Image 1: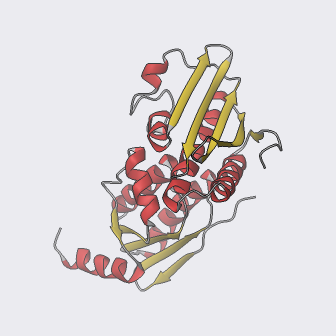
Image 2 (image 1 turned 45 degrees about the vertical axis):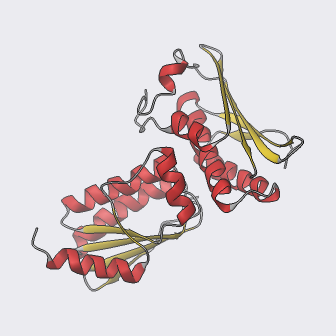
Length: 133
Length: 122
């Protein structure tokens, strides 16, 4: 699935598809059940964010390796309105929608590396990495 | 395409078992179906089995809490049963502890919990 290009996120069914693809990649990368669950949950949050706040986007799923271990890198990209105040957006409970405001802050806790790049008016890219233990 | 989750009735208890990966609308439909069915049957307890659910994210978690709130207003108690350990760990780390939702380890314990809740005066 890596190398198949990015997965589109344009409907609720796509959120389910993203979860399933991330699960498959996490199993193949040797993730424990708990780490699979965490990375799939983070992917679900970020995919829903792209759909709800940006009207859609895409995700690239990549298996990464360093000298010691394998991991998964997920790059969510959208061309939505962007996030004017990133720090605020990463606060638990902060939301401009009707959700709980846990999507960004919560998914950050579920992964090892979290990078958010947003340009107001242009879009948002969230890149997360989780390593197999 | 959205499949509706079957709701079983056993005495004055409704039982639903969520199988597999749920779309957001599927959870929303379950909320409406359960509210209708509780009123229609006068059920006093509802058990939601999530033992086959591999992930619960903040949306699904919030919907479970909302369903329990709605059914409480319709005079029915809700118990969520069968949560997987990995799901519980992930939900708490995500920031959701589902404080308002009764849980039990399995269906049998869920039934016992409902019996206990209903025999205790509110």
